[in-house]
Image (cartoon, rainbow, N blue to C red; front, side, top):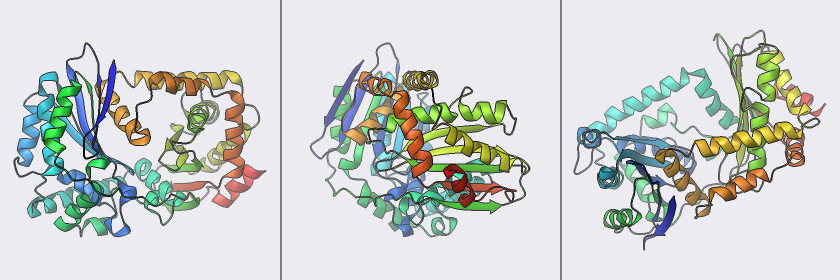
Amino acid sequence: MSVKLDRLGNGLRVVTEHMPGLQSASVGLWIDAGGRHERIEQNGVAHFLEHMAFKGTARRSALQIAEEIEDVGGYINAYTSRETTAYYARVLEADVPLALDVIADIVLNPAFDENEIEVERGVILQEIGQSLDTPDDIIFDWLQEAAYPEQPMGRTILGPSERVSTFNRGDLSGFVAEHYGPGQMIISAAGAVDHDQIMRMAEELFGHLVPTSAFTADAAQFTGGERREIKGLEQVHFALAFESPGYCEDDIYTAQIYATLLGGGMSSRLFQEIREKRGLCYSIFAQAGAYADTGMMTIYAGTSADDIGGLVNLTVDELRRATEDLNEAEVARARAQMKAGLLMGLESPSSRAERLARVVSIWDRVPPLAETIAKVDAVGGADVAAFAERLAVHTQPALALYGPAERAPTLEKLRERLAA
């Protein structure tokens, strides 16, 4: 496999990976602009803009955008995260130029028709309503808000309905002008792709863009806190978070290994102790997410009103126990899970293109997989034990609860149990 990274004269980066034997490809445009790049009055506009990209351009109607890709058997989609907006397509080899042309068109030439804005506003308001009616979805937005209060990093990506209800054409075009510069863009493609062809198309489609000043997002400050929403649901949804490393910090791999052994699979400590031995929940997991300058170790579970107190206390006890009796065998198992997940996840061109865009955005280069695997292998039991100690003893957690949570311990009680 061959990875190539180039840059246009205006700063736009192009990264590709040719995967022999494939007849399809994934190609997309990743933009370093997401929820944390919004001012408070813009909250939700990055996501609104992503929706509007598919609602028509100067050259194509909304139906034509969908038909041109689906007529050749492909698909096109997009997403918005806190640090990125991505527009991508999966097509056969011969249709890569078409896919890139459509993506360039929807990003650079959106019509922002007033009628379509109103239609899509209704769609997004429905999406917000659906999120509020999905406890194991909204709980993570509330946890983020509790962890990073009064900050861009803590705001919901969808935005509050009262703001979404007021966005207009000027708000959308203003965000594009501020954040959609070529220096913030990465074209990433993997599979049956030809790097030179992609470069020629990138120059043709994006070479005219004028460089803009890079936007500097506010530094994230994980302060911790509690949000508890009492509602008559069948279950209490419980989410707990601690600050963990950002993706540029040396111990990011230690954090991910720890999250895996704590709650990353059926053999993990939380799954075995809380679900398998005691039957207190159906789902429980831990994960380590990362951003440019911060990260979150998150634990989630859902349980009954009667069992929430026991589940929370057992979770805290497992966090404390992990500071005392980690063994090399479970660390080795977690390392193996992490490496296998990484390698298995890169067997599709879509996953490859996603990884290429992500690492270029972070490091402005593509680290070889062998380099990443070596960093995972370098994490030992002592490193994970030290991280577990630092997490449980020296950081302030964030807590979110939703449902019949009257019997759940408060954040202060949780902190006291961690310190005991």
